[in-house]
Image (cartoon, rainbow, N blue to C red; front, side):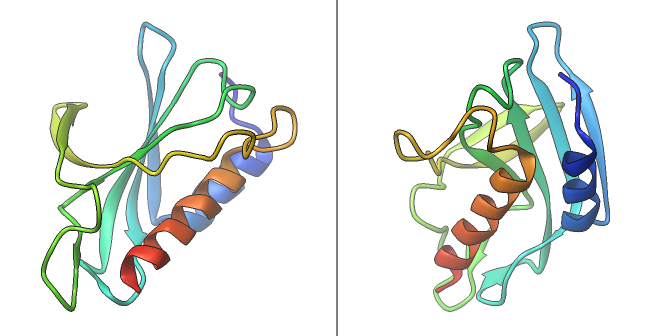
Amino acid sequence: MTLEHDDVQALNAAAESWERTDEPNGWVNLVLHGYTLPTGLLPSSIDLLLRLPSQFPDAAPDMFWAIPEVTQARTGTFPRNTEVHEPYLGRTWQRFPRHLAPGAWQAGVDGLPNWLATIGRSFHADAA
């Protein structure tokens, strides 16, 4: 999978730094270091893991992961449905199962900038 110029720009804008790890099965892992969370969530920044299928961007992404654990500032609890933790890249990540609605992803139109915008909206909803 090739990251397009717009993808790299979106990654650079979304985090302090990022790294890519390709898996033998075709999955691509992108770890965004220093991804800033909105007010209302703790901590203020995280490492954000994106796992992209080999067919991306024709195939839609699904879910994202965080380290350290993200909690709601007002309650100290996890955002909805984020209690599950999964091991990737030698670390244990908090899973955010924020699935796209059917038809929400348009192959040939949507890409990494869209996915990052969707993740940002999800974090803002979790912070509300």
